Length: 298
Image (cartoon, rainbow, N blue to C red):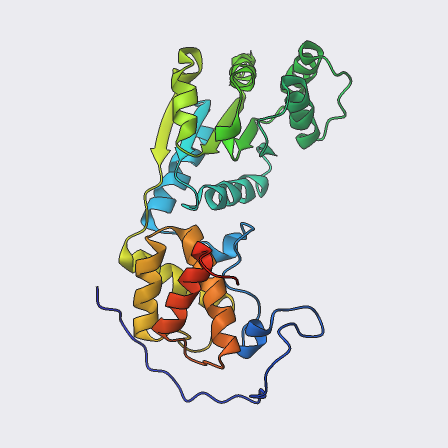
């Protein structure tokens, strides 16, 4: 796939060419300053919505999830392999719902807890002080949230849902059964790796509550390229940091997985700054790939 290029303005820098201290006085990694960035563009952890490049696939998945919530259709699942962007989409949906006054949102990322601890975590997320450690008592307290005057729908977003136990799937199903005269007021969206689908399929009573199930696919070459440039732009890049060949290598090695783009991009910028490469070469990306794969010491 040919890589489109941009005209690169003349690059000037007042930075020293001496061997740098790789952390500045504030603890920021050297490459951020070396490339005149505001912040790291390829954070491997975290789900800052600013850095999420909204592909057509992402927009569609977000729309489906929000429609399930809006229409009170109870349950949706978003599946995908590691690094395909499930947590990022969860973060975007969470922020959009939290910005509204007509929904209350809980976020969970640990379904390995006992059912009683899971209920405690849910109540805490909704600002409630749990009054018991017994599951049935906690469920009654949760139901009380639904019978309050002028109640707003409750949305539970569950990340890393593939870690769930069968007991917690059953508990979530029971929460979906709670309703008032106003209808179904609990909506749940599960985000997990593909193993989640197997666990859900083993519980027909839960599976038949799933209204929408979508799977995140890997990005195409053009989308991967746009993702790289989007992250660099958000971080403040003022010129094309990667040569066309380096961009091609980034696209090829990351295989369309956003998480791999971030890992590869992080090591590439680190290596490039150590080599005083103002425009990163394909050779540097190749060496960064070796670091990602753990074949040599970082």
